[in-house]
Length: 168
Image (cartoon, rainbow, N blue to C red):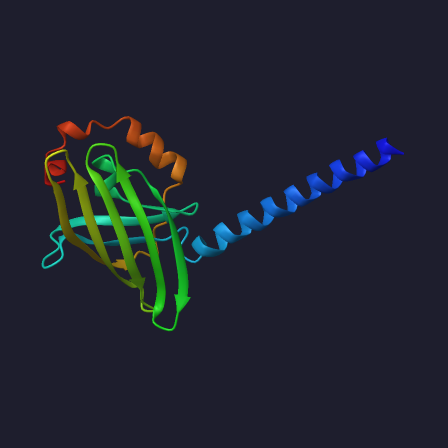
């Protein structure tokens, strides 16, 4: 009798665990799926005058910028939500040596994208804070690179040799 009750309890725990896992997976994709696979081409730089050509990618529930990954910022998870103005999203890109970028953006129905990026780099003697912007347009003819491919490419880069990274 105890064996049957124990077996039922174990089976119920496994079923509940599997159901919870499916709900969590579904929730994470529900937040990210509206933008996954998309690439936006535009300019990134100081919020008053973005001046560097860049691409913003969304894939596998993560996002990244070509320039940011070249400079050691890891792709970050993002959340998005459809609104009457378009799709809003938020996410963070982090680098061990260069701080973090906090992104808040809006993708308009016409495919335009406006992103406010707050950069913070903490050092033992001061903290640098700057506001950066990305403004661009959806590239319908281009799909985002897979997340794993982007992470693998990052392993081959030397951020200290890239003069562009001196800005960050």
